[in-house]
Image (tube, rainbow, N blue to C red; front, side, top):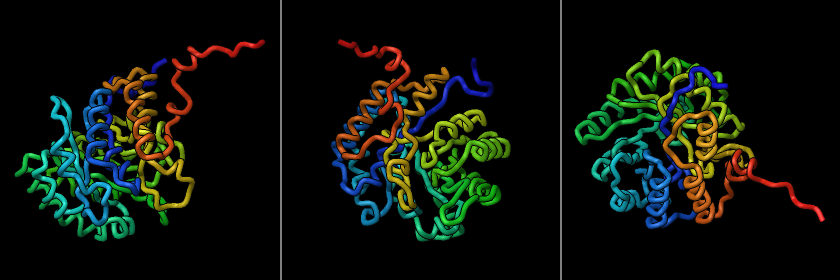
Length: 316
C-alpha cells in the first residue's frame, strides 16, 4: 500500500564532510576527504556539503577548505556546497569553486550567541551583503535556519521566530532555505507544519530539511517533511556529527544517518538516485578512518533483502 502525499523522487544532500567531520577532533587529511567524495559520487550522491569557511582556529578539522575544493572531481550534475558562519567566511568562499554557499542563522538567540558569537539581528544584518556578494560571484545562496523548531536550554521555537529568518533569507535573494532539526528533539507534527507553512508562504523557494536523530525520530521526520513537499533532505554518512554540546549518549546525538534515509526511500519506492550498497561502503570507510562507530540502523541491522536472504542456522 502506498502512502499518499509522498513524492516519486527526493533530493538527498550529504553533509558528513562538513557537519560530520567537524565533530571529530582529529583532522582527516585532504586526500582522505577527496577519496570519500569520489566514493560518494560513485554511489550516486549529487549534492555534497564538502567544506566550511569557519575560522581555522575555530574548526582546524576543516581548515583545508580551499585545498579540498581545488582537488574535488568536477563531474556533470554534481554540486558542491560550502558553509560560512559570517560575511568574512563568505568572502573566503567565493573564489573556491563552490556551486552553493550556506549561511547559518539560528532562530534562537542564545544558540546564535553561543555558536557564532553574534545576535540574530547581527547575522540578519549581514545577509543582504552576503546576498549581493553571492549574486556577483554566481553562487547559489542557501540559508540554514538552525534551531528552527526546538532549542536547548529553552524548548519550542515559535513560528514567528522561524519565519523571521526565512523572510530575511528571501529578501537577501536566497534560492533555498532549510529548516534544521538542530537539537534532534523535533517531532514529525511540528516539522510537517513548519515545512508546509514555508512552502505556502514562499511557493517558489527551494525548501529543505536538515535532520538530527537524538530522539530516534529522524526517519519519521523525513517522512513528515516529504509529505509536506520538502524538496531535499540532509544527513551524514554513518550519522556522524551533529551538535554534541548537550547531555546524552554520544551514540544518539549525531546527524540522521543518510543510509537510513536512503533505505527508507528505497522501501517506499521514492527515487534518490543513490545506490544503497555503494553508499554503505562510504559509511564503512568513514568508520574506519575516524574510529567512530556507525549510528545507522541499516548498517548495524541490515536491509530487508539481507534478512530475506538469511538462512536459519543448521543444527547438528
